[in-house]
Amino acid sequence: MKHFKTALFASAFGLLSATSLAHSFFADYDTHLKDDPFGENRTAPVDYYMLSLSYSPSFCAATQRKYGEIPANLQYQCNPKAHFGWVVHGLWPQNGSAKRISDHPRFCQGDLPPLPEKLIEQYLPISPGKKLLQGEWEKHGACAFRTASDYFYMEKALFNSLKLPPNKPNKRQLIAYLKQHNPQLKHVFIRVSRSEIHICYNKKWRPIDCQR
Image (cartoon, rainbow, N blue to C red; front, side):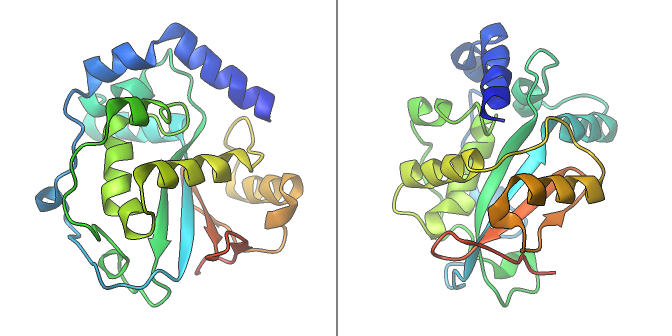
């Protein structure tokens, strides 16, 4: 699977320069708290973490159907020459008692300045969007990590620890594949939606059941 990921990323970035596309598609990648419908929650506890993985072709197809065209900030990920497969949507500190999205830790340090482009560009191969990476850091990462570098490093480490299918089978087959090829996930409940996988970890980074 590592060879598959390497080939996938090499293909994407051999055809498209990450740096040039970054400047072309998302010159303004900052995230603004005032624009977020769920707001901030600085007091919610961090009880566990949820890693969210998205299957890029399904996500891009759904976006195309919804809007009729791909928004500018997603053109890097959804460019047909990019060939992204499974990518990291985010790593989210979670409140075990939450009943709604706004109950989870969010924007714990408020609005933060844009991260250096050089830092963000290192993680575009696994999370293909500057605005996505900036937003995930401000909304989620800053609630549990000292620095953005620490946050993105953990996202990458968790992603690289997983063996993922080269495509997106149906839900039953996808869960079976994950459990067969990832022994650490064999006995935990994994949440699967139309285009996403949610894998949960305790505060020692051991897989646990996601909430049902």
